[in-house]
Image (cartoon, rainbow, N blue to C red; front, side, top):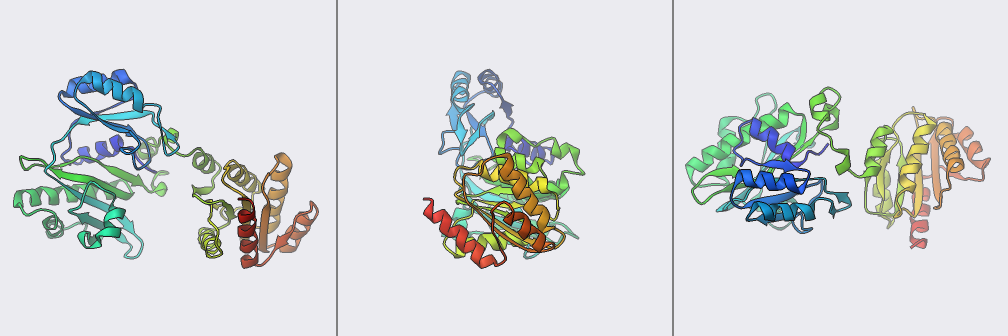
Length: 379
């Protein structure tokens, strides 16, 4: 679950991270009032779970409260990468001497929280990694001990030469680590961590993603979810207990099991196609899950073919077949469906599909090849 910047700021400020005061507004009048309270030049920033806010016109400087109101009136309601801006953050504008990056992720390779810091801040860390990877310094933290003082100082020394700034940055990293662990985060970053002309170190932006597994036991974190800022298809999938991520391709994938889903998407790309989604119906044998999965995928106009790749272990393939039949009777599916079924109750599943004129394959490669070919024909 992604937090808005203003929500991430609240968690970091509560932990002691130095940040400017600010406020979040849902109307132009609220933005004007916040700007008047803060005084001076402010930044009006769209609160939306999408990158590239500045390029899209979602970040504006305002010299007066009236100008903040005007900017807010234009930003509120605008669409950035398919998401409508419902709120804006208003914070004082900063005079910046330098910008650095400080971030934490859960690293699967080391199975530890991984710090990544770079003196090249203010831009996407992916861009830094691609163009100047030598500027990224990494440290895997042993969760038994947490971030030790000398480790934090070592990271901070890669960012600053002034030792007062080094000490401040080290303390901020320790605070960031505490927020990361205390809230079950999968990502927490400050970009930029800036210095001002008078030498102060201050966090100007914040991004935090919470592991969804944390939400069942943390009602306070679950309450921070803003479904209006998420893709409608992903909200619908979550409510239907499906794991779904929208991608940019045209081959819709319905698979059971995350590993098989990843393998299926890899194979789609291997044969020259592009997956339109990651959709895992899990190990349940509930046909209703298949119905919901098809509703979500067919709502995407980019999808030109639907590929079912089901390996029946706990999942009964005949239940999946019944779900496909039920869905196609409830609503018309305008794109071709390629089905690969193997495993538990496979013969029964094949008969069910044959009864409505559908064909089931048992070879994964053949099914993927057919799906990719059909998607290319539909272009």
